[in-house]
Length: 431
Image 1 (spheres, one colour):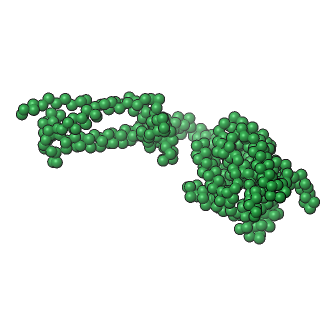
Image 2: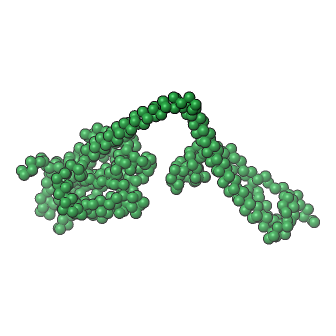
C-alpha cells in the first residue's frame, strides 16, 4: 500500500503578505480553521464528510472539547516572557507555531479492511509517527490526534494530527523556529523511516522516493506538472471520486454488453425445439446450488463435531488412565475396568483418589449472557467463541468458518452437561 504524509504549517495569525515575485500569499493555515475541520464539528470545504459516521472517529491524543488556540497562545506567552527576561525579542505574531500532519493510506487498500482493521492500522501508524517526531525533536508536542472514519463513505480512513513546534536555540532559550525544523530534511526523515517501521509491524507499506532521491528529469517533470504531486485532501478525493465514477461507467457498459449477448444466446436457445428450455436450466442450476450449499454446511458441522468428539475422547482417555494408575484391583473391578492392564498398580484407592473423583463430579455450565462470537484475531476469516469476564475474556472454542457455526456451538455449550456421577463403592475392609 501507499501512505501519503502531507504536512501544513499553521499559525494563530497567518501572514497576509503577498510575495512580490510570485504574487501569491503565504500558504500558512489558520490554527482555528484547521482545528474546526479536524474536531467533531467537521467544519470545512470537504463536501463528502458524512456526519452520521463521525461517531466512528477515534481520538488518540487530546479531545474534541479542547481549545487549541488558547493552548497555543498560552505557550507563546510563556515563551515570550522567558525571552524578554533574557533580553530577546518576542515571537512574531505570524510565527508558525503548529504543523498539521495527515497520515493518509490509499483508498484502495483501506476500502478492503473491516472497521476494526482500519483502527488497528491507524493506531500503529500514529505510534510510528509519534516515535519519529520524538526522535526528530523531543521538544515538539502532539496536541491533538484523531482517526477520521467519516469521509468518502468511511473508505478514506486516515489520521489527522496537530503538533506544536517548541524549539530551543543556541542560547537554550525557547522559540518556534519552523523555518529551521520543518524543511526538506524533515520531510525526507519522515518519509524514509515511516515505511520501514510500518513493515516491521507487518504492514507492506511502499517506500517513498523523496525529492532529494529524484533524478534531474523527474524533478523537472514535477516542476512542470506540480498539480500531479502533493495535492490536498479535497483535490485527491475529488479525483478519486472521478476515477471511481469512470470505472463504474465502464462496468455499466460492460454489463450492458454482456446482457445483450445473454439475450441473443437465450433467443438462439428458444429457437431450438429439441433443447431444454432456458428457464428449466436456470431452475435446475438454482436447485443444485441450494443442495451444494446445504451439503457444504452439513459437512462443516460434521467436521466440527468430529474434531470435538476426538478431543473429548482423548481427554477422557487421559483421565481414565490417570485414575487407573492410582486405584487398585478392587476399585477397578467395582467400576467394571479390566485389571489386566500393564502398568496398573494393585493397591486400594487412597483418600486423594477418592477426593479427585468427588471433585470431578460436577456439571459444567455457562451463562448464556457471557458467551460471545467475535472474529478470530489469530485466523483471518475465522470466528471464535469467547467467555466474557470482568477483566477481559477467555477463548472457549475457535476456528469456525462462519458466524452461524460459532453461534450453533454456543447453543451446544449452553445445552451441554458434562456429568460424572460420584462413584459409590462399598468395600469390605476386612477382606
